[in-house]
Image 1 (spheres, rainbow, N blue to C red):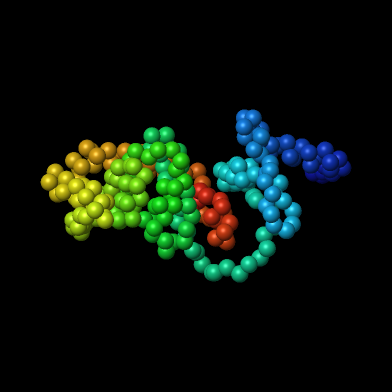
Image 2: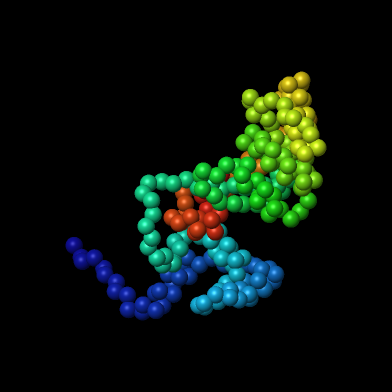
Length: 235
């Protein structure tokens, strides 16, 4: 039996370049993106100024998560808690386009309605209707929605009762009307007539994001998690 043919690499530079080309990915960007690729503003802090803009960093992090690429960066070691710790990714979705228009990462102890105002502030375009589940059935959410000039479409909780209506609490009237409609005609009729069922389109976007980015965190520290949504965090 003849000996197995052995091949010894001697042209390491060419071999290394061939390996790079094997995993290369060609991307096309428009001129507006390229003009904003590098950071132009000064940080005002000690040390070297930023080289790349937030747009460039977000683009590369998205490619990293989408293709499962390693992040070649050295992070200083810090003591972290053992075991798993959930983070919440709160998203605002335009059901007409399926695009995420607002995102915020918090600890698991932060309620959905607590950050609703922060999400709404991220939306620059006019908002016609806000559809959410019963977790957002709070005065805070109704007040923020009405102040934005939008229609709150939120089902009351199972044990909900009518709230006192007064000039100081104008949000109570809209919620009481929803509660009365459901009591008279049923929740299904209210969902159909109010347009609440279009919220299912936003849920489809949520499942699409989970399918692409997964459910696992790509960073251990909360500060890094907060800058890399929607990289697999629980909403």
